[in-house]
Length: 372
Figure 1 (tube, helix red, strand yellow):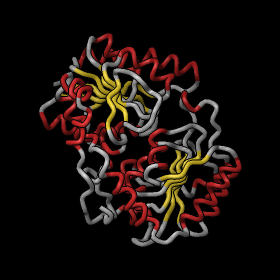
Figure 2 (tube, rainbow, N blue to C red; figure 1 turned 90 degrees about the vertical axis):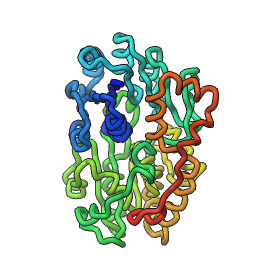
Figure 3 (cartoon, rainbow, N blue to C red; figure 1 turned 135 degrees about the horizontal axis):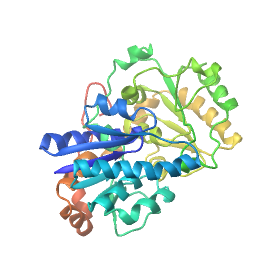
Figure 4 (spheres, rainbow, N blue to C red; figure 1 turned 60 degrees about the vertical axis):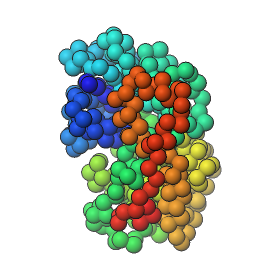
């Protein structure tokens, strides 16, 4: 089988990397395509995944419109060369349009529910795989599974955090630290958002530094007063960093969901809803959400300080995470079955959604993740 997997964001490398490696071990031929935004190619190379870069992403409205055409043509040309049997992506209209031109099926995973993108790929997509949490996407193409995208690479049966990262951070084994993650707000779905103000970023760093060490992960440049806090570990080590952190404080959506799967509390400052985070907050108590108003940003700082002072916080969060894991599937295992058995897998899931329960693996104990 020949499978083309399109990548639009560094998190998508993690989403599909285990699946890609398993398919290759099975004897399938796999090709990743990507647009370079941050460090997609660095991650693909680190995990030894075959890929073709379609070029750097464009900024601005005109650039994004031009990019749709240019990247679409390049994806189509790669498809002609590679001759895939199936295309797979995280809601990529680039892959969907190429699949239609190639006469091949496109399967999309979806968890952001940005409808300006869904409208572009949905007509050219055969199946859309989403979590079974409450969300607004209603279609006969939707296949719902119990879980989140982050379980494809951070499920305890697939990821064991490496404690050696603490040495790279200059952190003692029992020492607390907090990670602040700031996004660049340049994506099309970021229009109308202001994020965390510089004043409150500085205030949060100053407040948290009174109790713990602070590290900042940022998509863009940082002002001089914050640059010294920038996280300097390699990009592929970010999940080790998050796994041992005491707290994540952020205006992003992906890292908080990763923290929920890792058993790390997160505080999310964002005006939009994240449907996966809604469930992780309301059902499992794994995260907290605030709006982008100045008042809520200050409340988020106060809540962060309160959590950092809470005894036994990590142990409690690991217990909450473990309860969640017992109800969720190993997404990579499910996708491996779904792709290898396409299109019969689509029919099976429509007739018997409980088939996915075969992929619930629970949480196994390991030395570096004592809550498991």
